[in-house]
Length: 469
Image (cartoon, rainbow, N blue to C red; front, side, top):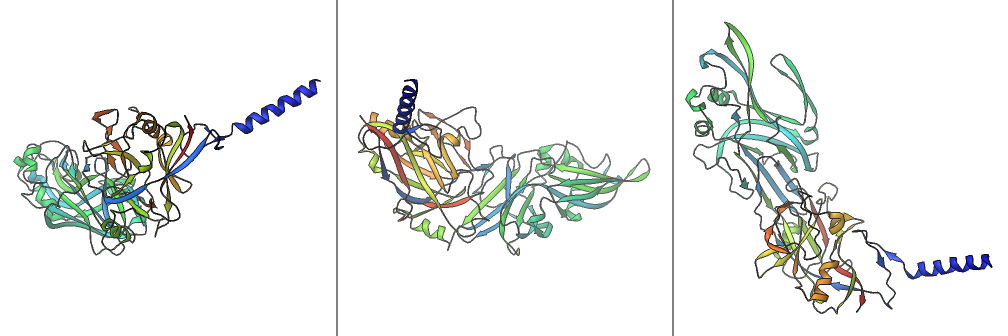
């Protein structure tokens, strides 16, 4: 009898298990009932996808990695990054000793830039040029940071250069002599600056070193650019100006206690006089061609990080969907192969927000965006909301957003799909509160092609699992 009861118990458990199968997706850990078309159903809604250039208002602050280089991508076009910076004495007053007359001679001047990363083809070979920013330009301290789309500052006097830099060597170890010490370092690009420029600063009237204001009136700064004739223009490099490894070093000799002594003086970046100007030119590329013809439903979406592009998505079928219990609603787009994808890799994340055209605002996805004020600089968890690449596709969990539409008749917004460096949407439940988020860092890193709503093989789509009410 006990054996019979035990067998019946096992049979009942197996039966119940077969009736309560669970289903998981790439995002979230929620349990989802299986579709049986009796009590649990599924449907796929079509998504239309238009394509546009993304107006960019990014400002580069002093403490982030700055982009430098020339990158020519056969699919997305050309990207140029140039850096402007003013190096200051570390304190007020004449920085080369008490008496300028004690200086015997200048041996060398070196601009050191702290290297952070590279994006693109690491076999790139580019020549760096340093120019003096022309006196009288508007380049000055800016605590907000200059727009990356700002017009280039006039800089016509070449004062330093380093030719044919191998990008594969940017993170190599270096050894050099600093006075009598041997210095070993890494991730440092050292650019010789002309002695004539160095002597100009050393011979400048001591009154001009009285404070930052008088110094700024006489020293404009540097423009750092990669030369357009560089042999291999296929990558961007990143440098941090605020790092202690970025400095302008003078190696010189002076009289000290009646003897000639070899000394060094470092100028550093310690104000807000910096700019990072970035431009894109997609002319003649598949990406550029789509920008011209992007106002109809697209088969492919070319998403490029800031300054880049976005897709405008509309899901008209949501407005007519009957009330029901939404178990899962997942917006899905598949990654499509492009040219040189292994060199020009995808963004860290794609982002999705809602377009409130009536208020001229962008909102976090109502009900679905998991805002977390303690999770800076993202302020959300991608594993919960989505936007990362997994198994060749990107997904976003819109379950609660769809539930609000079908049950409470909330607005069916157009959605914006993009890969921003920074973005500042308003919280959907507090439309007076905008949240600045850093999504893809550093700037310009990442591009990807994904399926659009008109793709004949892999459609951009919204998949829903639900029960009727």
